[in-house]
Amino acid sequence: MRLFERLTAHQLKEDSCCQGVTLTQCHTILEIEELGQATTVEISKRLGLDKSTLSRTIDGLVNIGLVERSPNPSDRRFTILSLTEHGQHVADQINRSNDDYFGQVFKHVEIDRYDEVIDNFERLVLAMRDHQDSLKETTSYQPIIEKEKAR
Image 1 (cartoon, one colour):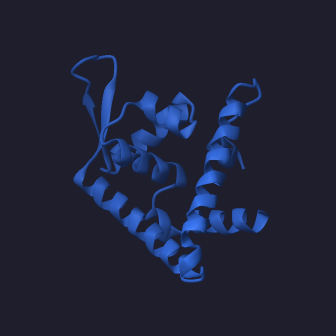
Image 2: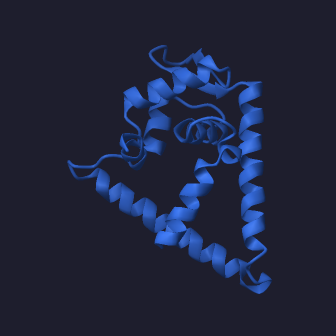
Image 3: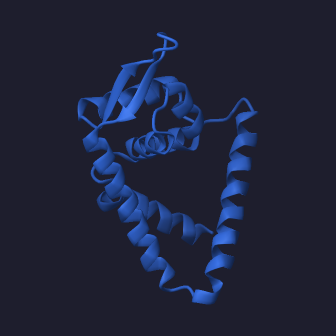
C-alpha cells in the first residue's frame, strides 16, 4: 500500500499530469468539469476544502482564465463556476494524460484480470471515501488536501 501511495503521489505531482496547475487547482478543474457548473459550496464539499482555501484556488483559476464566475440566477448570494474554453482544454489534457498513464499501467495487467482489478480498485476507493467521511465527524478532522498543503 505504501508503494501504491508513493507511485500515485509521484504521478499526481508530475507536470504532465496536472498541465502546469497545482494539484488543488487540478482537482478543482476536474470537479467543475464533472459537474458542468458548480457553486463553491459544492466544490468545497466534494474536495474537503475550507472556504478560504477554495476561494484562493478559484481566484487563481479565474485569474489565469481557466474558470469563470457568473451570477446564480436563482440565488444571487452564490456564483456559478464553470470552465472557460481554455479551462475545458486543460481538463481534457489532464484527463488524456491520466488515461494514457493508466493505459500504460494496464499493459502490465493480464487482460483476463482487468475486471477484477477494476472491481477491487473501486472497492478500495469506496472504503477510502467512507473512511474520510467518518473522519469529518470528529473534531480533529483536517481534509487530506489541507494536510498536503501544510507540508
